Length: 529
Ligand SMILES: Nc1ncnc2c1ncn2[C@@H]1O[C@H](COP(=O)(O)OP(=O)(O)O)[C@@H](O)[C@H]1O
Ligand SMILES: O=P(O)(O)OC[C@H]1O[C@](O)(COP(=O)(O)O)[C@@H](O)[C@@H]1O
Ligand SMILES: [Mg+2]
Image 1 (cartoon, helix red, strand yellow):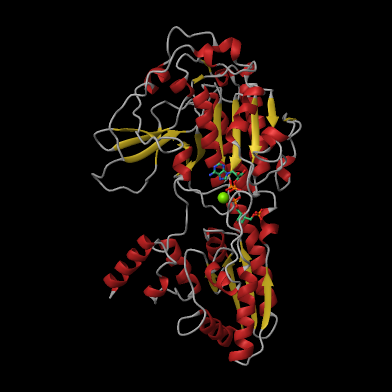
Image 2 (cartoon, rainbow, N blue to C red):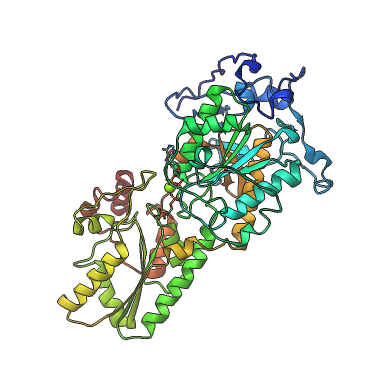
């Protein structure tokens, strides 16, 4: 990556000529040009810019001699240098009156890598999230909107509630709109007025108060609508697809020179968003999955030769299955998309089930929905459908595996088994968030509000090594978070279940496992001989 320092091109100062066509609520005060730029403003103007113009949002990085790299997020003053700033209203907040350090110092950064060696470069850092001494919005002129997109996840309503309450209680903002039904709601539906009273109880329910959808992202139409409605803060709650859409919205806003902050809040039950520690709702999902695993265990324990199969969510990432297995201890085998498996022959799944039935009289298998898709596709002659967002629709690996296991034990082993297949996927996704996720969602929402009020834009918020940070949106969409077979966590799982690793046939793995991972696995195998 090119880290050479290059100053952003000078932006025209004629901000008035770039104002929205429809009168924005910001218009009158935005024209007040501050005579003395703030410390933060001065500091920001010396940021270095990475020259990768192909990305929807280029990463802004500064590097010091000791290898300290700041991957900064954009700020409204990057393209609106004359935007005025105001003292943060939290300065007068009773709640924060005796807090030692109410405001995050501009120099505070969160390290991406927490385990380091003496003498190693300090590495990548992100802006620490939290309130700033100066804000770039006058509270009375804020018109915020919130939208939720993609699949459901426990905790979405808590995030909505806390954005509304955070904006209102901390910053005195009372003009907050709900965009209904995902991205397409910007241009196809009326808005809802959101107040603390309206959202007071929504966190007690699963789902999303604002409804959601897949597909329907039309950047131009969305930004036209943002402009027409005079919206100047956009809070976008959604997964990897949604964050890609948010990056495009931010870019279009910047291109039009609008004083609009775009904040992304990462949502995914699969925990597949990179950089952040984990996504909200994930803990709740793992907890809820225990109930299904427990039911499967009770069922199969109570019959002769009971085989329980529990399917959990996880399109490309098997985190829910892995953590639910580790938490439960009743699971004999966990199958995830990242770790290919095979059924027949020595070291295969059939042999393992047979062995556990002989030892214990029952067996419980946890299966992530994305596991073994290649087998199901073969047996169903490669159905390749997509949802409205372009995500591949998965074939039901749970039903497929149940049938294959039944067939094997009936036809080959000539043995009667009691198959119990449980698919709790939507039941897990639809519950309200648990206590720890509720607190997490509150922090996320408040961090997003502080960031937008401080004038940051094009950012996603989330915990990095337990500290909330502002991360450039493009950074969280460039890779997907998956279970690494070479990490200790997967080894812990294998050690706790004693299941086969299915990694004994390296050639059989080619094409099913990422080449880099395969190389690592082979290297380790050679080293351990
Ligand atoms: N590459 C993309 N560019 C712009 N918008 C996208 C992109 N991918 C998905 N979206 C939009 O984001 C929304 C949610 O995406 P989806 O993949 O369904 O869920 P998630 O955000 O949870 O991954 C949809 O409205 C979809 O149109
Ligand atoms: O049936 P739906 O609503 O399309 O959702 C199914 C998918 O949504 C997920 O829960 C997560 O998807 P997103 O977070 O990407 O929206 C997957 O685990 C699952 O495959
Ligand atoms: Mg997704």
